[in-house]
Length: 102
Image (cartoon, rainbow, N blue to C red; front, side, top):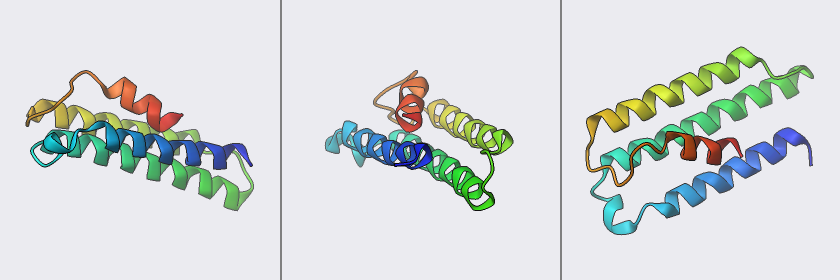
């Protein structure tokens, strides 16, 4: 399996684990947790798109594309935490990000 395919597969698994990590009793209540999962999903999709474009062009992945995905994730995650809408966790951006980047 190519490295980029392993990255995407690992990220999908990480998102599944992240989704399971939010207890069902809190899932319906917490817009904050939902926003965090959504941000992680968007980051995964954006990074997968960067890798797909590179594969289509038979070129290296554009670091600017990856940076843009990182920045959007950071902004969305900070926005979710700032609203403080029943977040079940805090200061977890690095943990979630490492799961997506796995």
